[in-house]
Image (tube, each protein chain N blue to C red):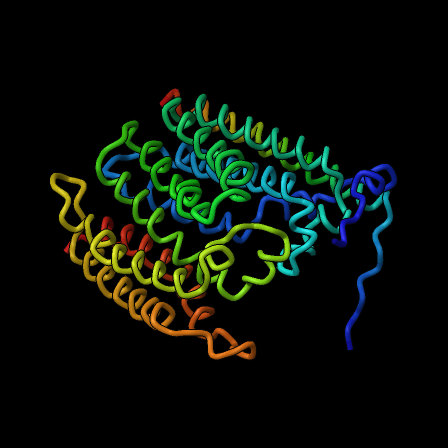
Length: 41
Length: 308
């Protein structure tokens, strides 16, 4: 038996995209912080 | 051609992050990341782990951006081929403007981050690799000449070179040899695939070697490149100075390349038996060629950290 996935609503797509974008930006800020420390060392 | 209208769908549906991620060709990117990482780890220099991670991230972002540019440019061609018709752009799940902007941001971010965090030489080579793949290969060579993959294959050869430069800060003989290995590996790898999807390429008018020169010529050329790859892959064993590898890499290269040559000979010396031919040797060569590159570069790193 195969389960066809439910079509995602526009709101769901937008929310998950914003969440990924937020996580990406947060990770980028943390990366820049660690790069600065590494460069100073 | 079953071309959807992505731009009309875009007005009602926002881009899903999964589709944006698919634009970066994650499976191809895994090989790019791996070879880049091997170039970085095999270099005779120490790099801070954070900076090493950043260099690999930049290589991945640059490769992803270039792949997205490729899909943005080839959306109509992709729609006409079974192998690529399920991609986000031909399916209309993403509009072209979003794809182009996403690709541009990834490429620009990767180059500037590489420049500021690692070195501007590595950033310049990364920029060259992106232009090489997105412009020289995708836009210029691919629709014009059956040698497209021979010259364009250079685009995929840059990651170990960039990884090495990120670690050492300069270009030397070893990263150029690593570049050459991937450069020579690309035609037999890609033509093995092109042999069993030949009709697909012919349908969308891409002049791949089997379409233009025929199967027999392609098969002979696969064999010729495999012959060339055998001594070239072992070359790092004989390099002078602190760049040469040990027997772990040398023996692995000879064994892996001999198997590559044997599989290429099976493809190179046979004829298709008929329309029902399942093309098993070609599929085996294609599958092995991916494994080959992972194993060869893996051996390079093992050799560096396990000296005999």
